Image (tube, rainbow, N blue to C red; front, side, top):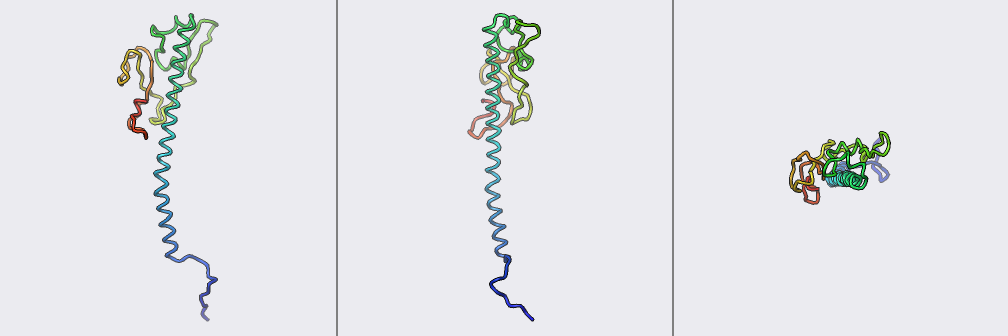
Length: 157
């Protein structure tokens, strides 16, 4: 005996299944570039935060050397750190035995390159100089190549 088709039959037809898969593909095609852009924007925001943190530490070092008389004898002639490692190792103020003022816990990792390597400039160099003259650190910049979402080069941040 043959069963008669009724309106109570459940299931999807092949056309409905193909239409659903097609719509899901379009939505995934739209969502993936948006997710990529959001991830890139997050890395750029992290880079800006890290650069602010390092520049703040460099400026604090400079301020301490200029204001604390005993710190001047352990600093460079220009009152800026010799290298970024000095910010992590600390500055001996000569106030107590083996007490150092530290400005950074560690040298941060560049979120775009994944390395803890940074471009450095001294106060004697132009803003456009990419090579460091090894005298002291006045400013830092990212070594990442490429252009940010706002159209600027990462090395100019």
